[in-house]
Length: 187
Length: 187
DNA sequence: GAATTCATGTAACTTGTTACATGATTTA
DNA sequence: TAAATCATGTAACAAGTTACATGAATTC
Image (cartoon, rainbow over all chains, first blue to last red; front, side):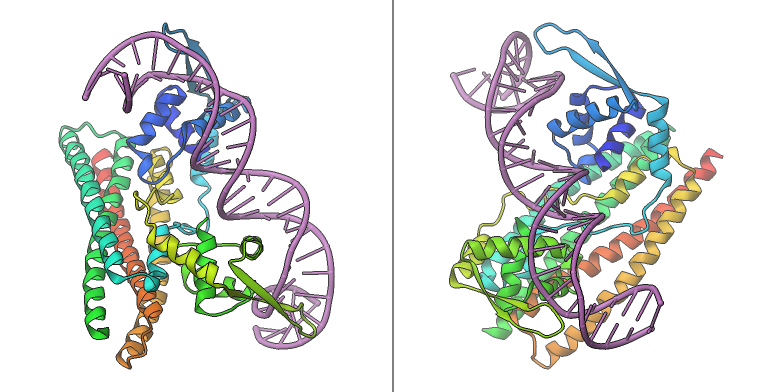
């Protein structure tokens, strides 16, 4: 459902192969929507069958031929219609396995939970570095007046990523403290 | 996959019907994991077939008989094994339709995006009220020394919900400001 | 009188993941 | 020499949603 519109949106920037779409997603939407290559090919097939996109073959030597997809007017309309038809309930539920585990963690030693929280913090630190790196490059480009409309909106989602990661980090740190406090009260 | 362990965890607190499990989830895990009743019944069937839980019938008048499920030792072991076998990658990706929409929102009028962000903020305010209400009740109970091990871990996930909602709110507010700034620069 | 709660379950469908199949070129 | 990159696709499976079927008691 959603992947369909991500593909239309990416092709609306410029024509690409399925493989290109996957690469583009890895550096952008992957932070809030992932897709396997196999699924991308399936969706591309459906989109072409419905006349939202068209394709042409670019022969290559030594590699499989490239199948380059281009968005059609019908596809552009489909994308914009979806964007304007905003759902009533905004975030159904972001499923989160980590929180499920914490919810039932009374059943494992506290040291294990603390260890996993620390591991999570380290992972978040790495993510934050990547995000702030991208952010700086965007800010530089923006000062040069090089920010496109797409770039601006993509930057909004990046800012959300940075805010999210920071808030997760402080929560994880506070949780470790709370666990230590709780432990000493119990012990 | 995850629902299986949520059900085992909830039954590990006390025996319940499928309907009870759904009700319990609505007030707790629903913030990070939802499930339809139909899916809960399917999982309960599988768990019983595998000997993780057992059931007995409690006849009722005017309503369908209750089928009360109880966790067995094999089920408790299955749950603890899962809790201790922590995955390498902690959060694969929390899929987020709202961010997908923002990412491609260059294609709709800015006023529409601002409106949706405002709607999101209002939704978050409501959520925050619910969360802080629960939090206060928990803090009171904790002062009375009434906090169970399960309650403590559940509270950690609640605190995460509060932090998340607050961070989303400030991001959404900042985004609206950035859109106004961007607009005036463009116009 | 309509909607909600209580209570169970099946069937059909959608979406997404993992595994498999193929194969040359480039990099570590 | 092993792994990664480029490039396409199918098949099997897993998970979750929506619709359907049933029906009394209670609340608005």
